[in-house]
Image 1 (spheres, rainbow over the protein chains, first blue to last red):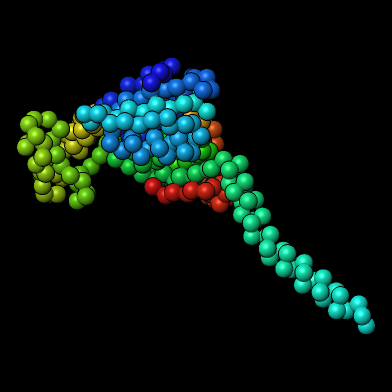
Image 2 (cartoon, each protein chain N blue to C red; image 1 turned 180 degrees about the vertical axis):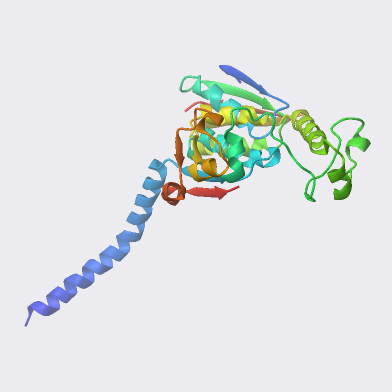
Amino acid sequence: MNFDKDLDARGLNCPLPILRAKKALTEMQSGQVLRIVSTDVGSVKDFAAFCKQTGNELLSQTEASNEFTFFLKRK
Amino acid sequence: MGATPDVALIEQIVRQRLDEILPQKIEEKLAEMKANKTPSMTIIATKGTLDWAYPPFILASTAAALGWNVSIFFTFYGLQLLKKDISDLKISPLGNPGMPMKMPFGPDWFKGINWNIPNLVQAGIPGFESFATTLMQQTIKNNGVADISELRSLCLEAGVNMIGCQMTVDLFGYTREDFIPEVKEYCGAAHFLPMAQDADVSLFV
């Protein structure tokens, strides 16, 4: 999937992946896509809740070898 | 005499119609109000050790990231968390049976050991608290958990409103210069409670 910005949140724990993502999103334009890679197991549910609350769209979420990849489209 | 039954009939029809449409209308209106309202949270932070510094700052920064309005009221030992330098916050395993004492280094079997050190020994060794604090700081680092100064900065950056308890400032002999300048308000319980009343979430830490 194409993306406009990349956020490496590997090794970071709650709530840092969310806070970094929020910061990255504020620097982006509406409709742009942010890719996030994290290793925090809790981030799966956290990003789902974050998107639901903030109205940013969670385009996809995948897991491969203990790394979670999220694609978020900015509201 | 003929008018009375008509009025009763009209009233009955109106009631019936209202019963039909009101529940749905109210639900729509409530959903609309909920969607338009910015959620808010107030936290009372009362503790000033490294371990207890985390819950208010983690919850506040996360809520702010979700777009909520957040205020934290720092009172009693919680005021420690507003000091200019909070890199010296300490943790004490003494008399804290809930705290696991594990080493943040060495092979996994060694890291897994829970060192059950008697209170008497902990109290008798000079510098035990500093030692435990160093271990905790290393554990925090190893696990990719934010350090507490960073979390506080993130809160401030995200617009979390930090309020100091004036009574405690006086009680403990602090001056406002002891605290970060981002603390805009110092007040008492009477000012804080109405804020908590309006908040969707109110927590005591």
